[in-house]
Length: 480
Ligand SMILES: Cc1cc2nc3c(=O)[nH]c(=O)nc-3n(C[C@H](O)[C@H](O)[C@H](O)COP(=O)(O)OP(=O)(O)OC[C@H]3O[C@@H](n4cnc5c(N)ncnc54)[C@H](O)[C@@H]3O)c2cc1C
Image 1 (cartoon, rainbow, N blue to C red):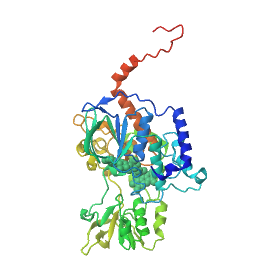
Image 2 (image 1 turned 135 degrees about the horizontal axis):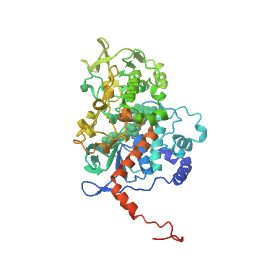
Image 3 (image 1 turned 60 degrees about the vertical axis):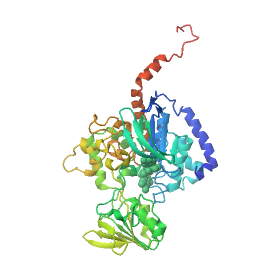
Image 4 (image 1 turned 45 degrees about the horizontal axis):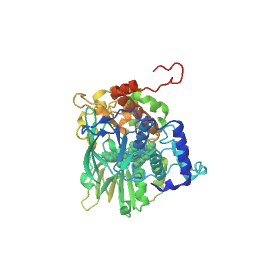
């Protein structure tokens, strides 16, 4: 429970939400037939890994479809899921405040409804952008208000697909154990697509004493008086540079490969219902063309992050300066080789170099990663549009399900729904960022409902045949 849960306005909002749900008869009644797992015990219909924004949205959308036998697991403690109050070092969300959030079409579930309940309606207009901690609290509120079955402190170590279930090895305070579910939703976030992307030439011996990725926890207080090198042009580089300077770093050198920063956030330009709803059914060639375009133009950091460092005396930017190598220096610290053999030194290195899309580096998928079909297995781009990075995205089905390079060798892969940014190539930005979350969760839940319905059809047909509510009882035509 977070501090905002005690705000008096929340009780009224929760009453409004209860009324909304009642009018919509949500969550829908449970209908799946239920199945026994490999040990003969009943298994949940869906196990959702990750209770961040997307895991919470997925769980909510599933219950709204009547898939109520679910469990949501997150290794992080409650209130610390995802990056918002842990490794995200911007002051506010980059997204505009008017995005509805995890609303699933219900006004009382929107961020604005939560914010006004907590801070008062008059606080909305003056709000510039959403504070990270508020976004975290909002996600936690949705989870609690909808009574989603989340358990924290449980880590999924490995996933084992089978023809009729998915086996999952878990670790929690009680130890390690194996469970099963009919389907698995991996809502494991940006770090869950293949881990941090590290530039070649960075000596692993630097970590953790002399270097960190921006997604690591970093002791910024220990950087006081130090010289810090930051690599990368993306938002996290700028925010980490700012965090280091604000913590008292003597200087921060930001090294950026590009000579000119990207100018326009095409992600925002494509954050509309057309892209979200239409992308999944575009032909692969059009998806690839759009991905190649966005890959080439990249996105700029938010101007707020740039202004945060510009006036700081210790800030130095080096455009057109790619990192070639980084290794422990002779006399301590980090020795950097930059651009055309230029050498520099720093006390600490922060890599704001983003995340990989690499199925082979998703630890939970280790036992079957090689079986997952990728875009490079399914689509050959025309000359000039070859982009190795895009080829590494998994080729997903319409419900975020993994597909197999050779279906006979890896049955059950489609029971694993990859609900994170790795879905971008196949399904668009509906498992990546804030704007697409409700649409993505709706699609996921619809597709899982259809798959479970098809699987359970024998039982559901038998139930239908046994259904005998006598509609005409009491009328002259009652004949049962
Ligand atoms: C620094 C940063 C800033 C961002 N800012 C914005 C922004 O302003 N606007 C925007 O639209 N998008 C932003 N994004 C992108 C995106 O919205 C976030 O990454 C968001 O957190 C995605 O939500 P999620 O639920 O998919 O993943 P997360 O919020 O990362 O949640 C994933 C959860 O899965 C859990 N998990 C993962 N693996 C396991 C496992 N094996 N076992 C148990 N639990 C596991 C993790 O503990 C985590 O809590 C940002 C991303 C980052 C990294």
